[in-house]
Length: 105
Image (cartoon, rainbow, N blue to C red; front, side):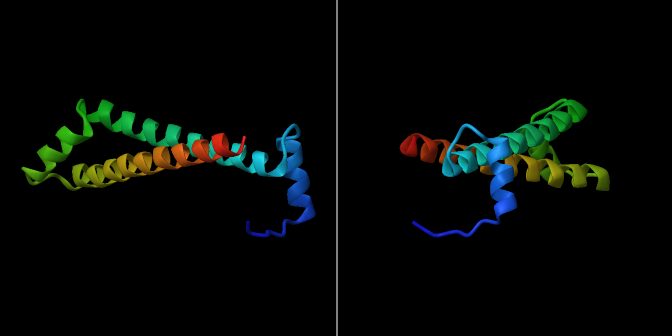
């Protein structure tokens, strides 16, 4: 196990945010909360694009690749793709955090 030195003020703050848990458990819970926050953010972005274009990302991507999109549509494609990729990454990270949490607690 790695040794980590934590500033006393930071340790106190973690204790105030998660007072009922050990330090390790508090860190896992904080990580989980942050990952969930990002998942919500990316789902919100994706939903906005689905609403704007009345389609799924896969269908929009197919349409973009088959045509010469306007600059704004092309930019939306890249932003939408980034959100889809980031959502997948965050969902994977959430699974890892939860697996680690279940193993440890």
